[in-house]
Image 1 (tube, rainbow, N blue to C red):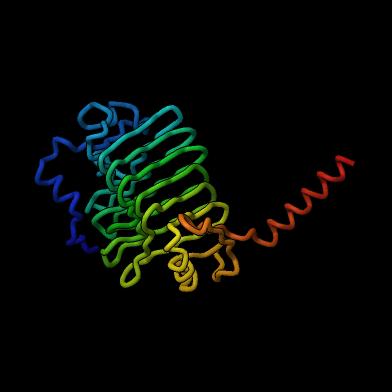
Image 2: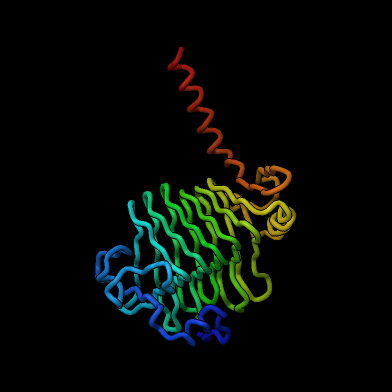
Length: 262
């Protein structure tokens, strides 16, 4: 295990300013972001807080943002550790997470594992860079909801990091940039039932990632497994063509529906 030597600018600034503005998640047992007892300071984070899951109460660690909860943070670190922390953030129901700055999933160390699951009608907005696998093993898994970030980086600049995006539903939007690490990094993305939306100028970039096998559709390589669409000015969207078995089942369902109507 090799601890990462490169620390992000945001973390350096945080170190200079002290930990007074950092909200540390400790998980008292109910796994709720909204419970003050789950935070070291005894208060739920406010918009000016840097929020960190660092395994204060042990590992694995789980944090849930549930329906009716609007969570906020200046900068959010899911799995900020050099001690092999495993941590999971679930955003579910109508839960909402707004991060005004950057958000990192699995930071610092090869043995650190961080996962963010977005489901149902949940919403996650990141004003800065959303990094999946900055230094450890990071995963963004969507089965529903919408995730919007100014930039999406699947792995960062740390050799040995792993970034994985799995779109089984929902919409992932990169407003100004989408980047996947190449040398010394393990970056991958699979689209099944979800939608990837990137800036118009990045359409060819995504096609290149698909050609390299870094982005797959239902685990299959090749641009022919995707459908593309563009408004010609702002965004490109990419979706997976349904697998043959799925299309067969849809056809059977349509025939059944027609027979019932008749």
